[in-house]
Length: 337
Image 1 (cartoon, rainbow, N blue to C red):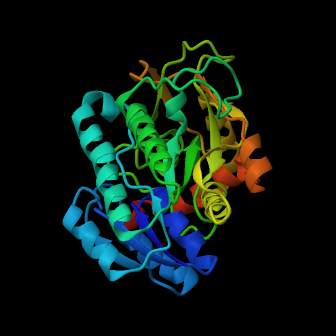
Image 2 (tube, one colour):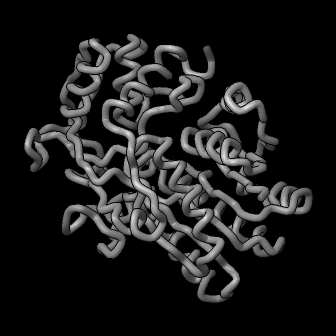
């Protein structure tokens, strides 16, 4: 099978590209490199002996999309491309709607024009907003609290309408919780530009003294230690979920929705302590104000994915941090090293 991966040089996309190559798929990667590096593809080549075909470009470029679908007979698309920072989405909502929603529309139109109807979409647990119950199942109400989450929900709604209009569509919507870690080789990992928006890369950069301290955004939440609680999932568990979903779409049609999470919630202070235990490095931190759009607690009920896909997250909190630390120590400046 030949797969198009949009956003395939980014954190999750590059790990998915690696997993697909190891599973024997042929892949083509499209990425605009706005928050990633094509060097991730060189590193994938070191691990697999295969360098993905790469096109630098944007999903909002309809001419480029038409060219790609005319050059290659894709069997499916894995769609990761999009802006993803909650705080930034609050400050720059128009950029998020233009890039995430409009870009996705153009991609889906190009797929329809080419007769490609199998899609795995990278959604987010942010579509649930501040949930009414824990753990969060796929049947929970959807009420995102920030523009980023609303763009993901809008795309989900578009895909549901698309599948209702044409029974040939086979769509998996995967709602991620908090991906962390890196490939065990230490050759690929998360390489955010500027100060990281996510907790674990931030901690790792403090650990290697690239940043002086960690900022904790709020310690007055209604949680056991006052800091936010999240469901962290190893990035390799996450991308393996995509392979399970892709296989399931060979027998399923319409829209299929699964949570991908570990089902366990850890607070910010939990993760700091575990990182210190694994690394032996003390992490200085400072409490600051909450970020707009953040919620107190969020962790998954992943039982539907286990039941219907046969998938579950198996890597531990220790493995998440161990693999992240190896990546950061081997690549203190990310792909610019």
